[in-house]
Image 1 (cartoon, one colour):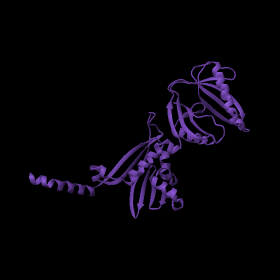
Image 2: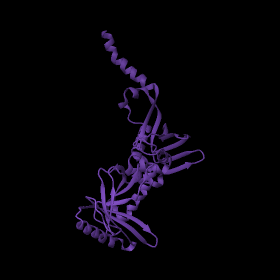
Image 3: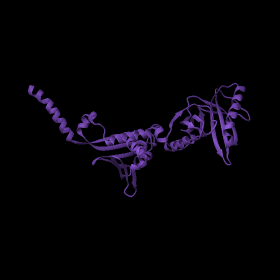
Image 4: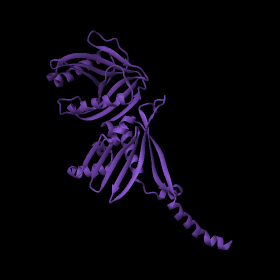
Length: 324
């Protein structure tokens, strides 16, 4: 028995050495809140790697002329060649790809699969996907996973999933779908005016709304604006003040309401007034990506003072009412 305990450490070490040389296959699946089409575009379009792979982005920012991106549409092979390494993406079947990294004549590879997620609940519907990967490994890493410092597959999939799950990184803006927690009431007024008079007329329009709010004894809150660009350099504005109770309105002022539980897709924007159109472009991609249905007009809620020019820095929430 004493000899056994003396031999036990040697047996353990011997077993660990043996386990290192026993091959195995590591498989894993990661759920992402993005469409399978966006997953494929991010993984197979070489230019998109700049957005989510740190090594490719760093090489591109340091010296873009030293980076070569190629696509062979006949053989379905994408190549990313940057200083120090080469990445090759080869399509194996419709939703399966082999990714290979070559560094100093040493290659690592794995198989990536993309599975569209089909479900009925809101968080996991058809606009989501599952990324799966399989790679060669060793039994030692199954026994002691903390010894694995992270393979090409693990690092790549982790970076890709983080990018796809982050609306700010993928769409350029923080976007979320939420529901109103109470009835949201607006005092509104609509006007059509020349675009050149926009910054002059907006404050006057809200002054008129605030004066009317005082007359009908309601508390005014955030300023909201819907813009409708018309032909001949004209623009239609629906200006709205959040108010705290229902009113009748008159021939110039209207009462509008969003009920409790109304779904909204909301993007946050901060920057020059002229650049806010980028948030609209992002929402026009986000909404169909997530199979959402617009209901009514979108509007900007101002969390900062109203703009005085195209270069005025503003902070807004761009909201799209949705049909669920």
